[in-house]
Image (cartoon, rainbow, N blue to C red; front, side, top):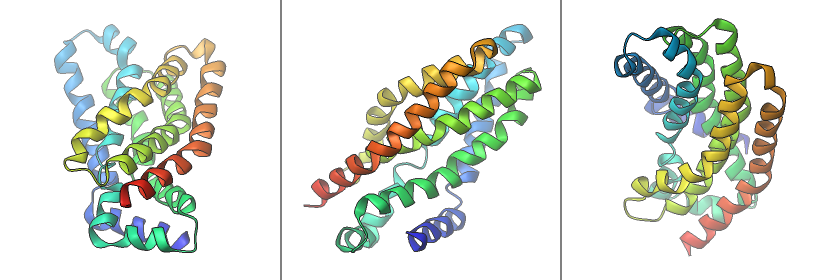
Length: 215
């Protein structure tokens, strides 16, 4: 698992397709929002946390289609299927590498981008905390979609259709926790529960999809 984790780190840094692409997309999306809304600072402040969550969700989709596709192209996926290490553990390693290189930079960038939306620093930190709790669920749901679409032609186009509906509960409770500081506890705990449930279920679902797809 550690070898696979290190390999995916190196690939993400070498291609620049992880942190850099996601953060740049996040930055561009948030920078465009004030132009769409207009010079209404109270409105920006009110919808800013929701826009940060939506931007993080869309940015997290950018590199999901290459999560298993590169391994499929160079034959590494066949080796993972035949290895003595359970495929479920390999899926967890790849999901962890993807989260660290793609989702964690979005969490770090959130307080800075919140300033562009006239969000108070304390609220921006709330949003970053909810993203820290919720993005693992987004990544693990995305892993299932990536596994289902890896052997399909134009699977990258199908991936958002598979992943976005399953991500709706995470988005709802993430926005609820970020926009209602007085009721932060319950939605935040549900976010953590969604991430834990995803961790328990997604590796098995993704591994089954990979085995089925490679037969």
